Amino acid sequence: MTQDDELLTEMYRRMYLIRVFEERAIELQRKGEIPGALHTSLNQEATVVGATLALRHDDYMTGNHRSHGHPIGKGAKVDRLMAELMGKRTGVCQGRGGSMHLADFSVGSLGESGIIASGVPVALGAGISAQVRGTDQVCLTFFGDGASNAGAIHESMNMAAIWKVPVVFFCENNQWAVTTPIAKSTSVVDIAQRASAYGFPGVVVDGQDPVEVFTATTEAVERARRGEGPTLVEAKTYRILEHAEGLPIPSKYREEAEIDVWRLRDPLPAFAKRLTGEGILTEEQVTEIAREVVLEVDAAIDFARSSEFPSADSIFDGLYSNPIIPLARLR
Image (tube, rainbow, N blue to C red; front, top):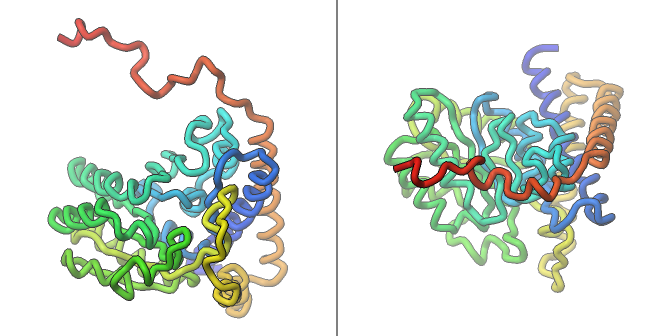
């Protein structure tokens, strides 16, 4: 197996891992083992993995409210991620972040937030930090089509362009901002067109094709690493399920026929067919990857279930320096 074949195989494995992780998380949320709303990225695995695999281990990224998959795409341990979703002490944020607000510094994930577009200025700061420290690190920041209209994104793009900050702006355009279609909230056909207003490249890719996403993101990352500034990559993808588990939408806002069209473009079976058709994997190897992934997620669930919740006396940990330095000593 060549190095390229190994990359494609790992690409498929991580996509499958995200799929199984999300499916099991849905089951756990419905049973009450994961509290609160759960925003999943089913059908968007190719977008996530294609983008994150373009990064080095020491590169950074920021996510959004739909971001369990991003740390997995960059190589995070799913046991600690599952523990975080369950609010356990062994989670990546010791159970304090949960589904929408987790961070995993072990893979350069600086945070994911339910506040729309809030991760983008953080990514800008990470990029500036790399410039100040004289490293060639890059930060990849994810946001959705709805967030693309937020002021924080445009302010960040403007500053990144002026200072040539090593940031890749990555829009996961899944067509719907909760119940609002992109055509009713955005004046341009492609969000990537907006990059031209700031003087840097904008690229549109098929978000259901991990190789196309990987190729475009790699070019953007390399450009940023050379000191040439940011790129806006827009991946056209689709959210198959509702905006979130545990957040019922009372009205029917999209047609089943539309969903069915995108179900036929499910990236997992399509990519598996591509890999077997090109002789990179056999059917047996595809089956073995699936078996190994299921075992890995099962083990992660067992780990999370057996972990303890944070103790009450740790409630203020991380909020301030402990011990607090008396003000008199600072004068």
